[in-house]
Length: 544
Image 1 (cartoon, rainbow, N blue to C red):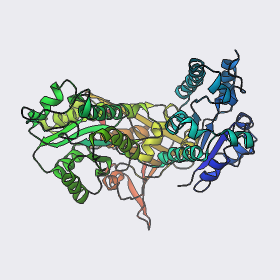
Image 2 (cartoon, rainbow, N blue to C red):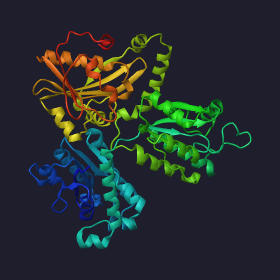
Image 3 (cartoon, helix red, strand yellow):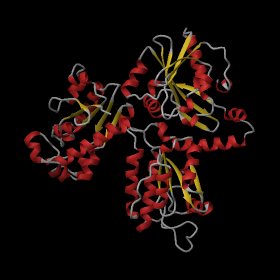
Image 4 (cartoon, rainbow, N blue to C red):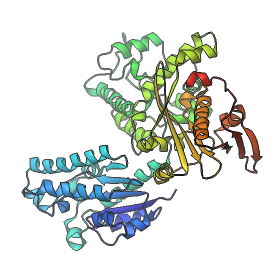
């Protein structure tokens, strides 16, 4: 998918611009060093171009006007960010580079402590900006330079010739990083990492450690396994759901997880466990059912090539990355797995709560098994629905409409700019709901967009798979119908556009009592109902 990109900088970035233009629409900036002027001038070519995403790759020494020993450095940094805030728009995404201070004078005369202090000033102000504005993000420039090394990153020759600070290789990596950020905006990340145990999370075999000890420690090969677990723990903190699929006696495996002094991951870190002697494809299918997720949400990590091939053949929708040949490669390989399958352009509070939410789902399922009827189970859940401000939760709204597939009546995809315009449109009503029950908070899991330019039309209706099957949609539709009726509307319309994944909601409007008014050649069905409806929908009283 082609994006509209702007790359603004205070140094010559023409090589990177040419690289980006091969696959995307790129703003043709006139020179460099006027990035703030372009942002501030609402009549500039930059604003006429209206990029979806703007990258600001800033050389800190140029921001400081090559004077890094004076007392005015802090003010120059503050001025740059103050002007950026003035020029920033609500629509679109902004990536601003973090700091790496380099130059002839910094290498020869600037102490490491002063260099780090100046970098810290920039990075602190950047972090504050990201916390204040939902559409501002850090571009990891420092990481690129650190990995490549100063000698391979900077060129005084090209700097003096044409203000081209970076070597060809550094510019290539900057371009690749920008393209990676854009790619993340398009893709749907995986949700669950399923892990084997023996010779994967630790070395050795559970149940045989009296003969051959478990390899997990602070040194040698044991440290390699421990560092793998550290990476996985960080993935969990960023919203990746963890599960276990392993052939073991469960008590032997759990004894290590609970009691081994070098285990980083403990029992509560795993949302679901299948530790038994069943075929792993069967266990993974059961996990998908129990978590109510499609198989394409899973990544399976196992040291055994036979098990990996089994899953590739029987469950091709599950991603099965290669396993490294040596333990010392484990942590690095898992970092690659994260970037390839799980990384997101930005992480929301909803992402961070996912482990808790799926653990609560397991408790709900257990309660359902013990209830004497489904109706009794729903009453026990004590479900509550709360409408939240869409304008303050744009990232989550964007995630819902772009990533929810099974309960999505149309499965259209949007950019952040389009979502922003919808929220601000006087002819749109955006209903965004947080749902919770006695076991915990599901988070913001439902979005409905209604066009009221004529007879109201439900353009989008998405509900997270976490709350599917609990009739929440009955309560939400009833609330929206009542709200629109109070505005004076008498008819509410809806549509269903079939896709490969949204079959579960094909009959939703029929179940809600709507009359089908049209069936189009592509399978689109159109419906309507008179509001306020006198129909008292089943389970409505449970939610309002």
